[in-house]
Length: 134
Image (tube, rainbow, N blue to C red):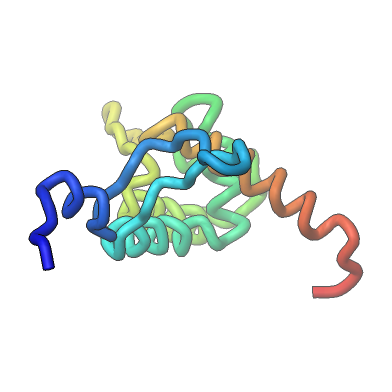
């Protein structure tokens, strides 16, 4: 049996990620391979996105930095609840925190988070449009 060349080993490595490209057979994009570390990271972020109030907070701060009191007022949630969710969003690196004097402001850590929320919303709408019960 012949030994694999370095190029063959790299191509066959399941941990390798590749850029999305057109598939040879059907024209559909070839999805990048995700190794276990990528999937664990995605699961960590997905857990942080699994609460409706957190999604509302992320949507609100996508328009610019907001203080806790502004978030409380605009969303009609209690201050302890908002603080709890902001703590979780900070822990998961989805928000940035900035202190200005006595005030603390929160903003999206990465604008791609809003893209993810929009994509999730579209997929949910499409998949659940005919569903009557949950």
